[in-house]
Length: 222
Image (cartoon, rainbow, N blue to C red):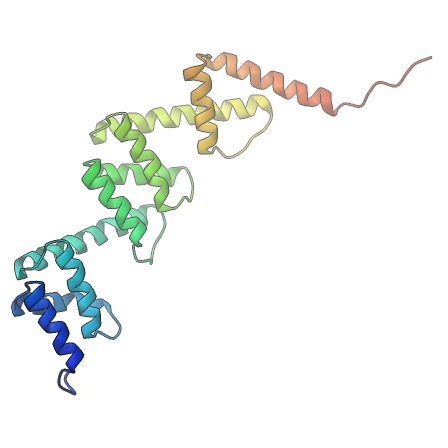
């Protein structure tokens, strides 16, 4: 902004940043780098950036520089996960950023674990980014902490999907597997302690039951 001098309101903003919030001129100038994402940078836009930085306790030039680098790294990681899922060309949403912080800060997972979850989700079909939360929450609850342990979980999930496919075949109802199907099978085999053979037998019985229901009633003879 070189075509004019500061307005009274803009001067008041600067006073707030430096006197009330404790930013130095160097820190404010460093924060100006964040305004490059805006189509029309302004003092009000810079004010919103500084407000967030102040709320996070980042008021020095060094802290702001580190925060910008961290933000850029986060964006890069999320975009890589989006690429694995087939979500290309879009900018990470606030929901995506919030989930990423949960997975990395609360769960303590790195990109090796997040990438493994993304690959698993991608193998299940074209599902959106937030669906990764179900996978990662399940891993966290089961204390899966390494890529090797995650691969075991993935292998177990694929094996279960194979058994569910066999159940569909026995029932004569081929279809795409959903998480609801996985939860149902887990309940049958886990909570109810049914063997896979018993589940297959039930599927075959259900198929015969449907055939009987669809058959016409026999006509009276004589």
